[in-house]
Length: 620
Ligand code: ADP
Figure 1 (spheres, rainbow, N blue to C red):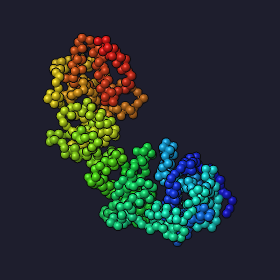
Figure 2: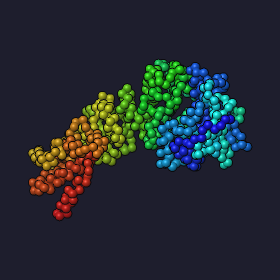
Figure 3: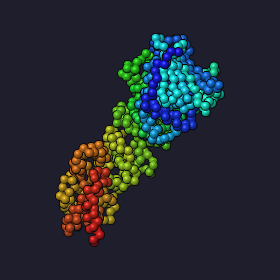
Figure 4: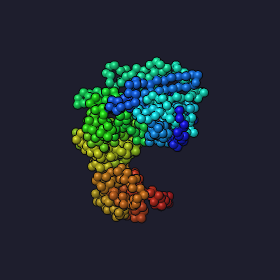
């Protein structure tokens, strides 16, 4: 062995990862074996791909396999593969810096949660470093598949850093010698290691040997017939390729011959990692051709909104030598994308019918992706709209409906589909925009996610019926529907009062009119712009925050008053006897409406007025 070539410190992020890995008390320390085997398997897949696409490799006829050796006396576990190996630069890159931006997310999340959640380690590509949970020294011997490079030894005893030196007489591939800590010597016992391999490595696509014995049977489960696969094997395979300790939520095993030969096994994980506040997910679907891995985490296989999928797509129509660049604009990949996306949407529809409750859970986790699809993927918009699930005034709290079911419940004279965006059920039911619908017994969809407003904007219609925001609908109640015991202002009184209110409020409102939709509320504001709803206005305001004058937005509302509401009738009297008081009350009515619509700027501006009004009440 020649002199040490380099003594180096780990990149700061790696040091932090190591700190977590070394000092956290994971219960599942054994996952390090899985991580190392999985790295070896990746290295072998890459080699198989190089060979299949005609690249010449060092020691071309060596078997592709993974071998583990235990040595109880020396307290070591050695794992060797005949994969692509690493050059000196690759060693520094791969085992000295963090390649994935995910890992930063891992660090943040870890600091936040301080959870002893070993499953996260694999999830974030810090796999190799998990070995530091059990080892006080690690030696990585590696020789690249490239003909003209020597072998190297990478050594590290933890946080202090690592050293790289040239190493002679190495075969192609990588050998990792794990020197176990005293209290972790169980991982140098043959029985323990065999058990772990059986548990985690059943689906490694290469033979895995332990002290000379082959432990796994190699199987590409996606290429088998459904009838030959046991239900639990689907879960096992998922946990292997998905680096997840939980079962998948859904799986779709699907094969087709026309228009393309595709075999695929797709999984929906039980958790949406984006919802947990992590970085945008990256698709974890691996692309194979006749069981040879072409690309792991292949891009462009699915539209972006399906990035939560994990699994395998195998197509024998792919040319083996397809490069990543040519894959991007390959019409073949585009075709695969089309077939798989349609099939997956169809699958979701089938699941929704089969088990609506389970589908609701899916929708809670992944609804945002479906909505993203509706707003970004025109080709699948209609199909996706059939999967939307909403609460509705026609159903009890907690129950959701498909749009199709809503349409089926519509009476023959209802021509439009109505929706109301609101933070929750209670707020929706007490929303003034809902009053008219309630009185007329017309069903309204309740939308609780701010994104839904954009979804409705993009969809515009469903099953030929226009989607209309409740506040934009024309709802004219007659006296009977209003069920009002109260006397209403007559037409002349109404005209005079609205004229007076407009002159009192001036530019704060665009128009003032008598409402035909209100039952319990004294008044309501509506956006003067026919294409704008209060939710959209609210979002625009939030986006423009700090950028200028909120008063400009305020002027875009119309005020509708309820002519039979006691406040409005009293106001009509008071304006004659006490104009100053009536003006203050009118300003306050407008502000209350703005608050209700979520459009009030700074509510502090009304405090002086409120105090005046309170004083007025107390003095009486
Ligand atoms: P990940 O496997 O998620 O990329 P790791 O920290 O486990 O993260 O490994 C970092 C990188 O080191 C791998 O991406 C790979 O390039 C390289 N590597 C690890 N183990 C091996 C191996 N046995 N053979 C070749 N390269 C390896």
